Amino acid sequence: MEGVKNDFLRSVIRGVIVAVGTSLALVLLFALILNLTGLSDAVIRPVNQFIKLISVFGGCLVAVKGDKGWLKGLIIGFVSTLLSILIFALLAGGFNGIVGVIVDLVFGAAMGAISGIICVNLPRKKF
Image 1 (cartoon, helix red, strand yellow):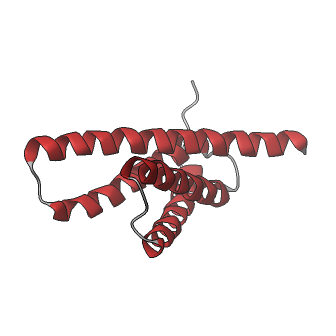
Image 2 (cartoon, rainbow, N blue to C red):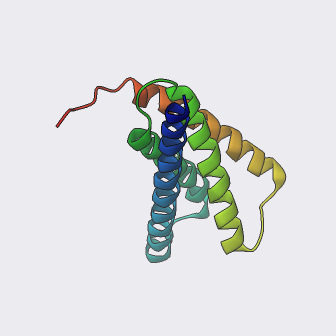
Image 3 (cartoon, rainbow, N blue to C red):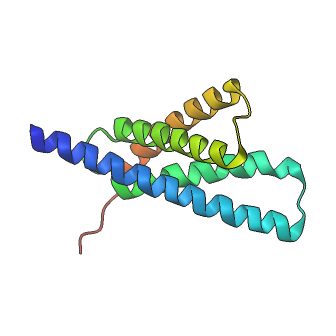
């Protein structure tokens, strides 16, 4: 039983690390693109949501195997979104508002649960 808990926790931590790392890399790349192209501010929010989606799905893709994909994904989505919010708030010097934070957390958890369900049902190649 202890081994199952450790495997669960290990896979969730791995997924969170991949999701946060992917999010940071993609946001930095997007900031560079914004700086070079001068795109409208209207594209920032949708692209940031897409980056979160890709990041959470990537974390789930790497970490979610076996059973309870929805739960692993939900935790990965929630925790990685929370960590991303905290990291970007530190970089920006504050939060944009509590309602936005709550919406992002719910969105992240939902994306994670859906991603976990998808990833647990993907066929895995054996090498």
